[in-house]
Image 1: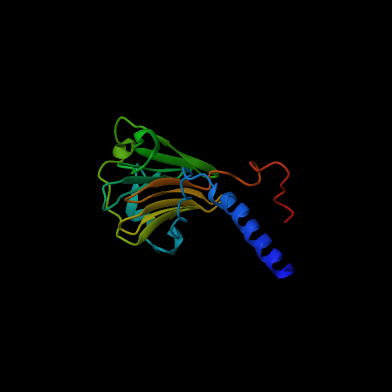
Image 2 (image 1 turned 90 degrees about the horizontal axis):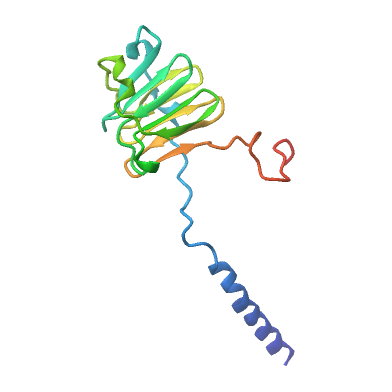
Length: 177
């Protein structure tokens, strides 16, 4: 009799606990996949991609993006950005700052003149910035703050938008685990 009561009690707890698991918000999108390891792609000689009197490095990708790293710390890509908010066609940032999206009336990197294509599986790096492509995915990352962006055939997203030393949930401390 006691064992039957324990079994029935366990079954009742399982039934009561089941709706809590199913109550998760079904509309919440899954988190984006991790960014590719841009620094794992083969480096190219930056001077081969030098533009604007050696003040920037620019390249194009197989899918038609134009990207630039400026020696003053700015970086970005222009072109079709699948899934970007509000139809943005430009994603850009600066060293130690998270990038953001914008709508540009034209290619802001066109002032560089003719831009060379970057070989698949390679990257251009300057100081803490690296931008490159594997042929399908284009990504830029700032190793100073681990922020950057990823442009893939199915989605475009910002990486590292939140600095855990500045923006953190109440009651957490990044210095103590």
